[in-house]
Image (cartoon, rainbow, N blue to C red; front, side, top):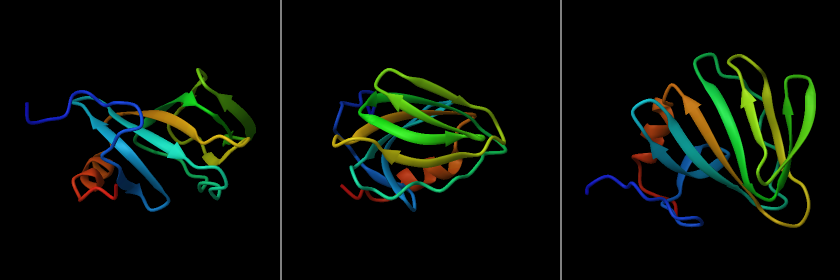
Length: 123
């Protein structure tokens, strides 16, 4: 097989998907998935919104505090958050002393993330 189909927990390749975050990209025909690792003490992510993408955030481990619209929410392992198009979200920070791992699912695919993952891995 030429394209990766198994993505093991904690393994890369990690790419600079966004200027502020590294992640492991998993591309599909209809969706893009990115596994993000948030270290303890990392500055909050910027608040932003998407006009073209719906997003689901699935917490795999750890705990984060984030905003969704006008609400501040805490997400822990097993929680899922749906972000509709045009809803501001972000300001994500780790809560506690353990790193957090989140899996984001975007539909339709995020071409700019796929392009970022085509560059050399950072680790």
